[in-house]
Length: 91
Length: 356
Ligand code: SF4
Ligand code: SF4
Image 1 (cartoon, protein in one colour):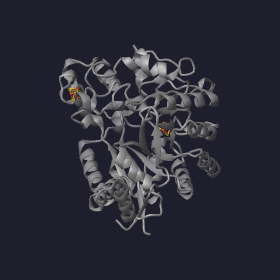
Image 2: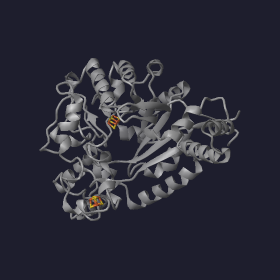
Image 3: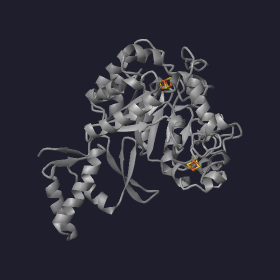
Image 4: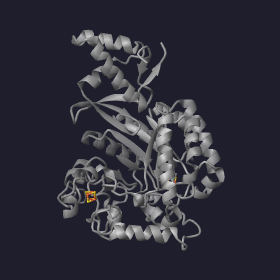
């Protein structure tokens, strides 16, 4: 899956909730409160870069080991893909 | 937040969650009154708006209402039977920024579906609407309301969801509220059906992982513990009736000692925070000792107040479906009686609101 390009499908979008002071991922019948890491990953989904590239970019930006970041990104996106809140397509 | 835009509907499902006393068209809120409520709701922290009914497409201003909801910043979901959604209207809803459509089906076989919905030709029209929903690329949830007469068709229902390209489906066993209470003995599934459905859903979830998300709403009467109705009274959800009445849940009017305020008279925030009807069962203070001392207190919040009212005649009682409830015997007796010989022969259909 790491070679796939993840993106938010139609009907799923982020929203800054002023009342709660948090970012949420809104989708059909779902409102998922995003923590900082979750939001950082979602913000990277530009529909152009692959999961591998995104993990590498995040690792560089936060000065974290790329192996660990890759695992986090993959887990997070797979969970959302199972809920159909994230789609993946071939590059 | 659920906005019941109208009680009008071309169908007359015998399990409709609308109250027995339906609001007439002349009492319905105007477009700008709804728009104002949507803005207030967003201010209050509401994220998702469900446009429901009755049939929301029966409102001529549906497109304008969606525009208003999106301008208010709300994630906007349309809960519809599909009847009344012409291709042209769907296109306008698409342009208006409607986020998601939840299409209800009464069954997968045309004859059965039309019998349940009390509307001839309804199934075929619905499938036609579904094609246009898919063509326009709307994210779709298929909402299948299940009961004794269609629970055995669950495999075909899942197939239908896949065929229509739905991302989600809700396998929602009828909840006994509103009109469904009148038809309980016709609708109540058997325990065998429920067990089979659970197994099927578990299997289908695995098989269609990543393609179709399946939510299962089990029938209460066979459960050991109640559902966390509304996620707890007055905690996360609210319901606006067609005339602007603000309710903690859609069935709250069945609790006779509660009175409700209208959103066109009182600011929504004031109702949400201070209205005695919202305070009545908020939190845990109101609970009987049984629930207060229970480790599921913050899981199910003592269950459904309207169910306690309907079965135990006390809205402040532990939900009678709970195994610990002193009223559980009433539920078991109902199950036994209603699956027995004296089952009713045909549906009592929902009647249309008076046309004034
Ligand atoms: S349950 Fe049936 S009758 Fe009631 S609003 Fe929905 S489609 Fe109409
Ligand atoms: S006793 Fe009350 S809190 Fe405990 S499971 Fe039953 S309904 Fe829920």
